[in-house]
Length: 89
Image (tube, rainbow, N blue to C red; front, side):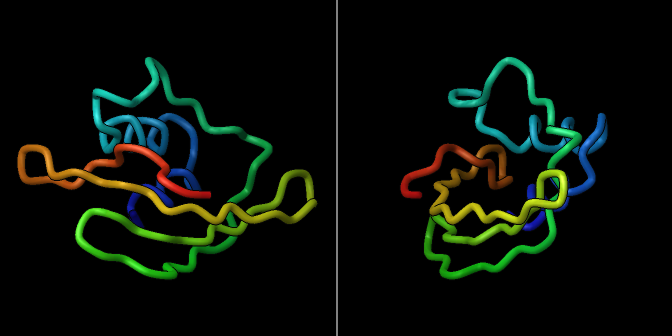
């Protein structure tokens, strides 16, 4: 979860590639492109258990603050955890 947040924060080709590689092939889009106007400013892990993580990620878009509150499901694939889907927002 934290590595995916960092990848979104970095953005660009490096960030997009990491987000793509850590997304389950069954649910990921064909292409991942981060929004260059969106600046991620903080991550709070609210809870985590077994195969899910609940978090609040803070951001700003052209100086306007916002937050994404989500519970995400992950699966182990080839020994690595990958993002599957949002199960609650």
